[in-house]
Amino acid sequence: TERCCRGAAPMAAGGGAEEVPFVEDRHVEFVRRVAADTDSFEQVVSEHLKMSATYWTLMSLAIMGKPPSAISATPDTAADELQSWVLSCQHISGGFGGNASHDAHMLYTLSAVQILAMLGRLDTVDPLAVGAYVASLQQPDGSFFGDEWGEVDSRFSYCGLSCLAILGLLGPGGRMRNGGEALGVDVDAAVEFVMRCENIEGGFGAVPGAESHAGQIFCCVGALAIAGATHRVSADLLGWWLSERQCDSGGLNGRPEKQADVCYSWWILSSMRILGRDSWIDRDALVAFILNCQDVDTGGISDRPGNQADPFHQFFGQAGLSLLGYFSTGEERWSAYREVDPVYALPRDLVRSLDLPYSVLEPVADGGGGALPEAP
Image (cartoon, rainbow, N blue to C red; front, top):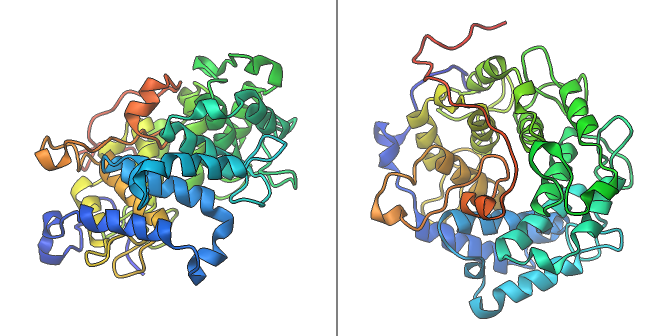
């Protein structure tokens, strides 16, 4: 176990974040190796989430300034092959499965839309068909099912609104557009469901009354941002709770009394960036933690130092470094790197080119060790 406290010193070899460099070449090799692996035990047992895994690996490459074709040993045909595979996973309902012959699900539908956006091939799908699938999963209370079997989770609220926005069907202020008006999506009801998931400490759970969790908080804050309702969040209170997730290792955990995990570098920092409170995190300590989670020999990033690397933590670790400004120093070696957008988890330049809607709060001053709000 580890102690959790704001402003603790990082446990980095040699005492500084720069002691462990970011090993770009190894990470590119890791991504390509994972993408080429089709018959290992790990790949077989996780085939149901290949759509999301493909999104994670493409985003890892995108942050490093590499095109989607860099995922393949045959870059000239990589984009066409990716597009063909993604479309083979679409169901007659309009939704996408996690792999070919798998049931459609909201999670994988968003990953499919994100992949097509990165490929520049959103025009290969009918946005209204995908939008109709999303709309079919909204319930009278504003929540969304994940699939036809009926699980409700605030993750799906984010996935649904993000899909609609990326497809051009949801515009600023939560207004449907481009034919999306006829789908019957009730954005106001979606916002109200998310707000019913808010807890006394400002966090959000999977459903009303459920425990606050950093992953759910991103989904709820992100959904509100897309719907133009970020002002509904208790920003100072939630910013305090999120800043308290920093542990003595420098890493962030998802809820009290848990160990730090690299993935929360994304879930928490993105939420705090949307709320304008990301300066309340000890940047240097978190950078050191993420860099120490790298496998400097074979590439990849793990959940915590010394563990097995995987594409999920690889992407979210890099995304955390991006939000922390690690790649934004003006150095030549980072010149091709792309910033990650805190709302859509896509390259920021792509979000701008698609003119995707969202609202964020103005940044507030650094807490400075004494200006953070008191615990409730």
